[in-house]
Length: 55
Ligand SMILES: [Zn+2]
Image (tube, rainbow, N blue to C red):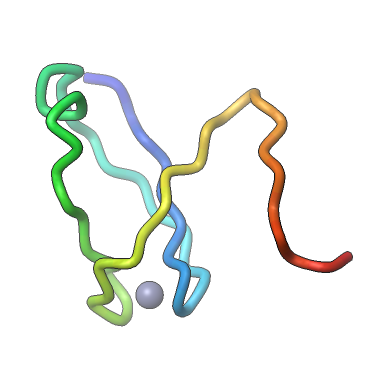
């Protein structure tokens, strides 16, 4: 199963979720394991991701 990386927008906790491509394609809502927020964002590995955070 592929491993997808997510980051919580609230506490910036990064975590990984293992799910099938079929399940992933359903864009299920994930929750942050630390603060329980559902405001999580997928981290795309090996791709340059633009962030709004100031350096
Ligand atoms: Zn969190």
